[in-house]
Length: 109
Length: 120
Image 1 (spheres, each protein chain N blue to C red):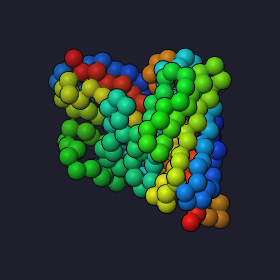
Image 2 (cartoon, each protein chain N blue to C red):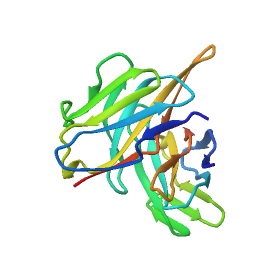
Image 3 (tube, chains in turn brown, purple):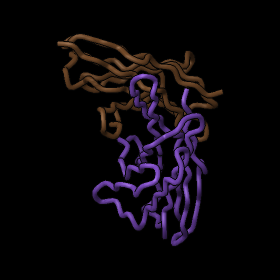
Image 4 (cartoon, each protein chain N blue to C red):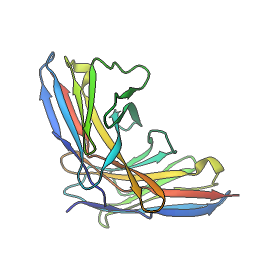
């Protein structure tokens, strides 16, 4: 079956670095998405990876290893506003999204 | 874990026809369901929020007469795109919010796989 796993909750300190991991199993693969969702708001697009490697975008970076079915989202210089849920979603061969349950990131001063 | 399904997964229709998309929570009751529209590599745009047994709440700029939402039961919400036009072609995603009562309230939002609509 198709499956996405990511940690339920993580805690980090303001100014630090945190890595949120995501593993996936899908029927075919057409890319992996990361979204940020603040409570009560719609998910905001962060990144899309379809090739192996690291893509950096400001304080956020996303990594993909297709052979391992693994991705991570790296957040640097954490700010209090980064407290949110981070959703990992893989797109299968039918261009359907398989969603992780989300990782709630708590930032402490 | 909780599963949300959408049907159909993809649909192609002629301009002027209506298309119904179903969103079901398969193993939990969802008092609230959300409908989103996604453009390639962009954020999900919330279209409307539907609560079981009541009228949907539409976001600004979304035509409620064009995008009809019915949340008839705790496990089913439908989005009907009426008189579809090519500009309605998009990826429509629903999500369902589960309210688990086990001494305290825990709310989690689960997303469906999406429905790809192409209007010719």
